[in-house]
Image 1 (spheres, rainbow, N blue to C red):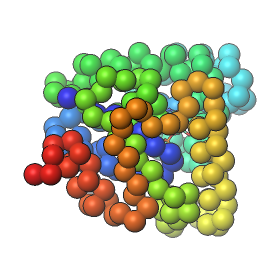
Image 2: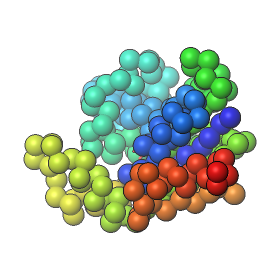
Image 3: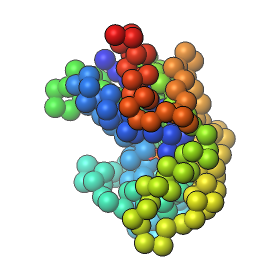
Image 4: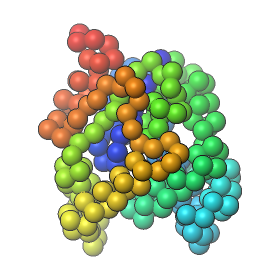
Length: 210
Ligand code: DC
């Protein structure tokens, strides 16, 4: 069983994908983490994330340890990730890894949940279930801002909303694999839903109401 979960930043798709994987006994891959890991390599090499040669090299050099780096979660990593994600060679380098994970999940799991931007449209167009998780930009910014509560010198809510909108625009407007719902995807708007309600709606879509 393969489940594709796509959507914009901070819509709740990561938490939802993790819960679905746990519930159905599937492996989970946060594909944004791959783009973040490429971005981190580029930033640490003091390269420009919009420059294709260095970014493609970083994508091809990715190793499992890169995916466990705590700096993956930093906002500047996220911003650079959405820049390297525009580069076709970076996307091509990460495509096979994502498909291999889905078709031969680690730990002998009987399937996988992948979350990202283009899973249902490009990476796994034949996925058994496709969800597109959205929420208003204001509520996504508020959630992201709340997550940053413990961070010293956290940006203002308005700054976080600006970052969210800027990243959305870059992810939706790029030429290669832009963020958009796959045909036939189940649209889940979490603006007024907490995680339990979102999970219940996703489960009902996948398994039926019972
Ligand atoms: O989901 P996230 O915030 O960790 O993703 C970081 C960036 O990676 C996002 O702005 C766009 C890019 N990305 C992508 O282009 N395709 C994916 N499947 C996942 C993420």
